[in-house]
Image (cartoon, rainbow, N blue to C red):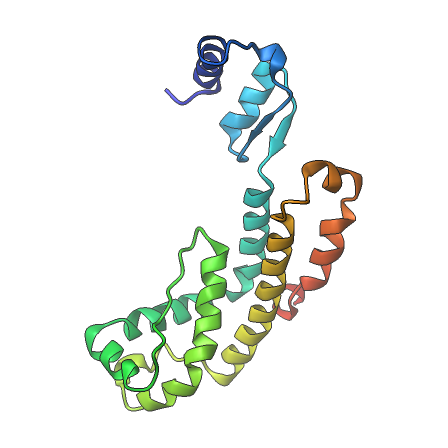
Length: 193
């Protein structure tokens, strides 16, 4: 059973039997933003601190939404380039391997887009491969991907900054502009349209 009540019972048991503590020793419930965790926080009477990484991932996924079709097309290209025949052909021109994305990790999409631009000069050798025609980004799509890549690189630098050992939650609470000032400029042209 994965209800908030079941989680609370387990948490109470763990605190008492494993840590010799009680709910009075708990300052806050820190977890991902699943509804069950929010309900657990209410049942425990403790503030809920949602996972910033999860919220950040959701925001980046929303930012990439206008690029969904191009990203699906690019993911298809990377998949085709991984096939035995085409990967062998690619190895003749580059030591780089195609990278496909994991839709639950925005950073994998950033890696895929970055790899596309690394492989792009070598893709001219595939002009006669009819199985790739529908997957090759157009000039306009490549331009859009270039814009998106710049934004994703900037967002990656923000996530690295947030992972610094010297930064803690108190810093962000006292000075939320540490994050906000770095994120707002990264709206893309497609997202504005």
